[in-house]
Length: 466
Image (cartoon, rainbow, N blue to C red; front, side):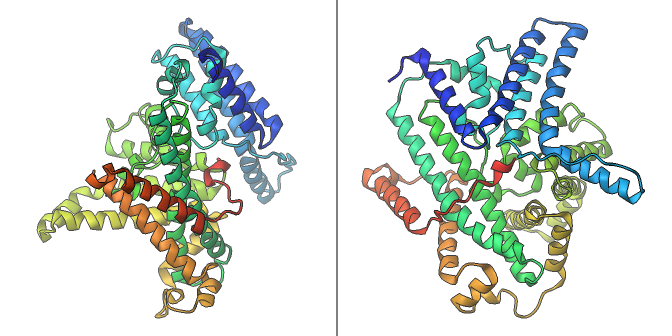
């Protein structure tokens, strides 16, 4: 209903209110970053030589410093204090009582992408302060991505969007699918995962493995569900956000997995860290070093803890080993005459197993808990493995935190999710979908399934902590 020139201001105001619902005064941090990077980009564009590099470094280092202070200062400070204590040094710098601003890693990376592209001459500095502020503050993807690039989002924000009922309906449909992922699959698996990981010291190997697999499903449903909701909400404003997931659990290698999982982050690291380090146009040892650096930094991006660093290093190690062993694996396949479809199933299964092991380090509260869980999954098997799938409802609840009925409904929901993902992966379409009664029947059925099986108690999105 608003005139076109007022719409960006309205959405910017809504975005500010949305962000202030968390910790109101933390919007000042965002305002500081927005003003700083807006001004530095305007100075970078016409400057040359030393001045250009100086403005660029001021912007980059200031933005990174903000992230380090709020997210990593206490982590580094505690580790320095532990080392000092071991060496009997006098170190008295106290930790900071700070709450991590919502989605800080996401909007700092989005700001960094803008400044880097202006510095490289790949995108002009934005003249309108309100449009640039909206680029950083745009509420659908402000707190958990996708991490947008200026060339994709800024032109859309500057275009007067005309309401399109077809796009709005498509957005609502995408949001419905996101709610199904998040509050039916993600949050219900979250009950199981929280219970198993909080009782990891007493749980047996099969329960720990089941909990790890459940977390793989929870993490995917939770994060991709958020992205579906964000993309759908944005579509209703006539603005397209980047896709962030592309059926990652159908990947045939860990490297392919990261080309399908959290793609906006993967491509960010590819363009702004991996390629500047030399990319793949270097010797194999140097390439492995580049991969390990990128994934170690990616692990720390996810959280300030040794278990996050170990998770990133583990993914990097997987990819290095995958490249180094590829010739041998190809020889084995040719020697044993393994059919391509069988090889594909083996590769997908292996990838899911490797990723699930790495996700244990993501979910654990510490590096030692992650190592303990992983080692016990490998070594402590018994003949009564997966007994909770065969025992009574109370027994299943005792081991998993949810009953057999809830577990069965979760299995059905997960089957629906991966059936749809398989159809998308194989680009299968049904003529029946063109019939209105079939489509609306599916919408009503999915809505009813959500209402009957969703976990409606407060359960935040996992990636909000980043």
